[in-house]
Amino acid sequence: MFPWQGPAVTEKDSVVITPLAERPSLMSRIYEIAETWPAFIPHDPVAEALLSRVAEDFPHYCVVATDGDRVVARGLSVPFNADREDREEMPDKGWDQVLVWAFRDQRHGYAPTRVSALEITVDNDYLGRGLSYRMLAALTDAVGRQGHDVLLAPVRPTAKHLEPRVPMADYVRRQGEDGFPADAWLRVHVKAGGSIERIASASMTVSGSLAQWRQWTGLPFDNDGDTDVPGALVPVRCDTRNDQAVYVEPNVWVRHEVKPHTT
Image (cartoon, rainbow, N blue to C red; front, side, top):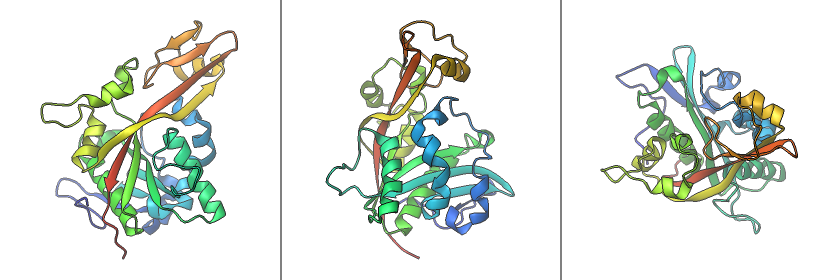
């Protein structure tokens, strides 16, 4: 269990973290954060269809951080049923798959057996303050308050985009001298008690015309084959004959044990 309880204020700052269900007035403001997600990421069709509904439909599984009246971080997760015959706990389709399952299960009334994190995003002005650790702890605590004993996370390693041609499995094996992952975001998860389980080889998929990719990236996209794109964890496959390019992003499944409790 992470060392976080209730609204959290540290001696270092005045940031307060709470479950979104306790501050519903902030639901419409969680995307006010100054963030640096690559421009093509929101065009994953699953994200386009469902992500904006997560806070409203699953507020008990989401957390928000504020500094005074300013929203400075958000953490989103969703519950889903991993016990159905056609499913697995940590699917290859990762982020996309658990988000689809969460809304399908909600519609059909299937009881959730697992929870998956979707994102933790910290305002650019608040990076480097340890807020990511606190947000992960808060998100895990929120999951425990719903009676769950596991939080899964299809993690997007922070620095993988700097080496898009290195296989994710090789990248994940890199460690610092202290034995923790070399990647900063994986390191946060493992230091917080998480265990790296497997690669989600097709966690997100973004496809579009070459004109769309040129707009998103500013790159020419005029040659067939793999194209390195800033912010992409692996190359984007370009097909000029068919006027399309496809990005299939791998993530890393991390498992956190959670102490379930209710209030």
